[in-house]
Image (cartoon, rainbow over all chains, first blue to last red; front, side, top):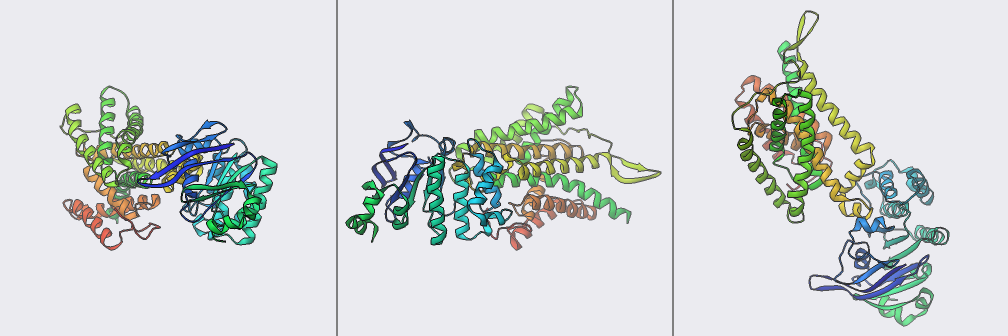
Amino acid sequence: MLDVSDLTVAYGQAVALDQVSLTVPERSITAVLGANGAGKTTLVRTISGLVRGRGGSVRLDGLDISRLAPERVARLGIAHVPEGHGVVTELSVEENLRLGSMASRGGGVRQALEESYELFPRLRSRRRLSAASLSGGERQMLAIARGLAAHPRLLLLDEPSLGLAGQVLQQIMSKLRSLVADRGLTVLLIEQNARSALSVADDAVVLALGQVVAHDRAAKLAADRDLLGTYLGF
Amino acid sequence: MHTLLVLIIEGLVQGAIYAALALALVLIWRATKVINFAQGAMAMVTTYVALFVIQLGLSYWAAFAIALAFGFLLGAVVERVLVRPVESASPFNVVILTLGLYLFLEAVVPMIFGGSIRSFPPAFAITGIEVGKVQVPLSGFDLFTFGSVLVVVLLLAALFQRTNLGLRMRASAFSPEVARLLGIRVGRMLTTGWALAAVLGALAGILIAPTLLLQPTYMDEVFIFGFTGAIVGGLDSPWGSVVGGLLMGLVLTFVGYVSPDLETLAGLAILTAILMVRPQGLFSGHRERRV
């Protein structure tokens, strides 16, 4: 579904991604792993159009999206849940979710809100509150719920484990799995927390210093102790 | 007692006009994080357009509507053509650009419309309404001035709080990157913000023109007072700016009663005092701000 080929991104002289190629098959979860500074966030930001690549291409079902503005990419059904501060803190919880549902291609606002509250019941009781009053974990829930409210075909999740308790994280991951099965969702999951990502993903890509050093089935990589030890610090 | 009532009414009516201009500045501040120093001059242009329409023989109401519509267009064009290309650089560039636009408009308007002082008709009588046998110190035009600002402010509040467009505009102002990731055309939202701000400015310009008389510089003082109102309210608080504008109207009217010469001085004194004592304004949620 998503084909990244020979993608090169540089910030001035510093090369962040060096001829990165990877594919994300439809209806699957692909994890992108790597240490801090490996280029994981740059990769998702380039896919969603926030960063422009210097070379190579990003294709969604064959359509080259690497020159499109982020709002155009979003309208094609790619939802990017950014790392950390992905919620608009000046708006209420429900307004954040409504914004997400506006990007949706089908399905009403009310339905999207209901789905979000079902996924994260804690958000329902806080829906009138400013997003600024939420805890870090609740903000992460809100950001993920807002991404899903757009009913995307491809969900880009950047470090969802950040600030989330293990139990909540597991709950989200199992929900993602069921969305992949039921709704045909495709997920690109960026994680530093390799153990949790490998347990949920179908495929995994390991990035190191802007290059792909491994791209295989997640189960296979999880068993590769050398690789994990070298690049992911296990 | 009667004098007090007269001053309060006059202050609130003047204040409504400052409030409209203050709110215009706040809308732009929230969208683009700059002060539009050309806001008053743009309102001057739209009022000249209104006068032109009236001189063509059309009614006040036609001129009123055309001035507001022209304001919308002018605001949008200024944002698209002038502000957008320099926006990615330092905010100072945009501020200097608005100063340049201010000078340009005040220079070019006399070339087109002539520089002489013109009178501008009010929509209603400016003498007090009679209730029974008593004449109250409130004219039809006062009511219209206060009422039309109130209506426009409430309409804007409804737009921002109750509609999807308003939600998109707020998201674009607060968090442009996140807004883009949600498929919002942030550029278009900014253009709309500038356009709406210029409508508010046009309203202020046309409402104050009968009192001040029309000349290319007639909005300069109004701009300063509206700007002070916005600072008093805290630049990022729409309701604060409305209250700030009304306060400015009241204070300046009382000062003007003591001595008309002191009015401008008092406006500057308030501006300086607020910036020294409470730079974030009286109603701002944020603790600090960089201008």
